[in-house]
Length: 177
Image (tube, rainbow, N blue to C red):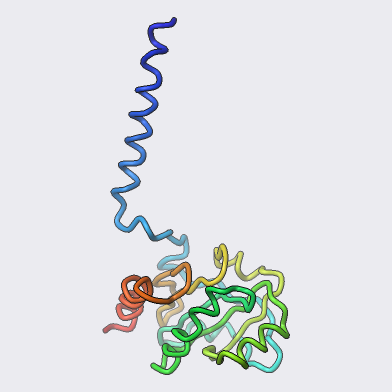
């Protein structure tokens, strides 16, 4: 019984090394795939943020590319990406915001102070819509094709080289550029 035990640690190490090697061979190990890719986007069942345009399900299937951005005023990365969202809005990109697990007054104050990049905003203080979309934490942004199918999911703030190298090429592809 004792002789085979001396082979156990090297066998476990070899097995673990194979698992790590296979994991490193993925196309893009930085991406966390979404089960919603190439499927219809879920409806947005959240309410409205007082003083801002609300979201209708038709907003997700308008025939043009739409971004759906999950954000919160208490989220520092959300604040960091707001200038990028404002630039995308200035380019004519329609952005739907889903404010999640936030205070309505603080969310409104954030948009009034830092600028509102959203064409419409859903207010989801309990985070139910985030669960429907598979969002783990803000910010997360989805690129929707004109037919309402999800083309890409981006986790994290859209800033710097991460935005330029990962998000922007996917957006340009969805836009047909």
